[in-house]
Length: 99
Image 1: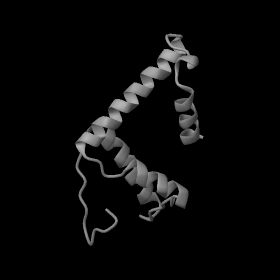
Image 2 (image 1 turned 60 degrees about the vertical axis):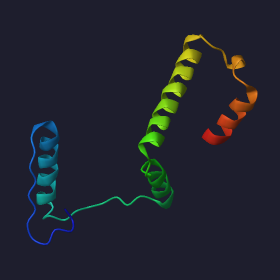
Image 3 (image 1 turned 90 degrees about the horizontal axis):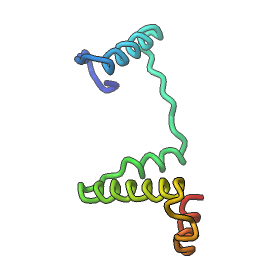
């Protein structure tokens, strides 16, 4: 949109399109001046990690790992497993990665 040389047409329908029309109206009220919040360097690094290119196999592995972690957390919440059931070495590694 920001690189168009003359005209730009946008087509759509439904709730998402209503949101786009609302945003367009806001831009028109500001005389078509677009305002951006530029991410900090730290935010850009995180964005690059989150949006990195992955093969379908890598995406599936990530999804499976997320499901496994979710299951572990739910089992801990529900008392199905206890933190003492988990290897201390893995707990420490997770702490180091997450903190």
